[in-house]
Length: 96
Length: 146
Image (cartoon, rainbow over all chains, first blue to last red; front, side, top):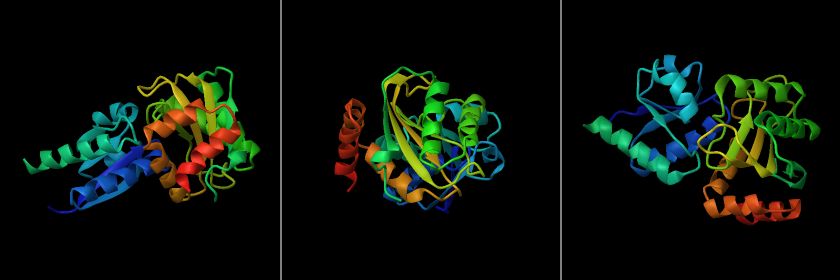
């Protein structure tokens, strides 16, 4: 599989998205999938090319309609089990 | 930058609305000399425009705005809300209200990483919420991160 481009999105791309980016990077590493995880802000995320957007439920709602890639909601940015599972099912959806 | 030293911890007993809570954490960042007052207004504006997305996990909020001229230095403070705050998020109510400010986008990576690891421990999160004094809060944080 080619390297995936993954956006971690928060309001400004500097606070909570940074936290999410770290957890996402390690989740992709755990399943040996190459991914470039980068942070974005909610205003520019949907016009940035990527394979998936990971974000909170509030921001997901505002992006869903405009996004050209899956928008995946993470309820808890510190719940490793949730993040690992959602990363895994996203990767599996690509393989189908 | 040391992670959450005692001067960066505060316990608030009174009940607060979301805006009052953001004022509290914003003023705290200002009082420790890390932001100008305008940063607090920027945080509150972002709450009005983007909603409570900064409530990043059950009972945990990471309030912040973007790097701007309102920021004097990178910092992280913690307000323990003894009357948990309802922000209108799925992860309500919030006991641990962090306030973050950064001069540049990647200015706080190491501190955020440590806090992120610390908060993975759900038992610790409830332990922190139950602290009654700054001393307890400090010990609780630092037994796990050092």
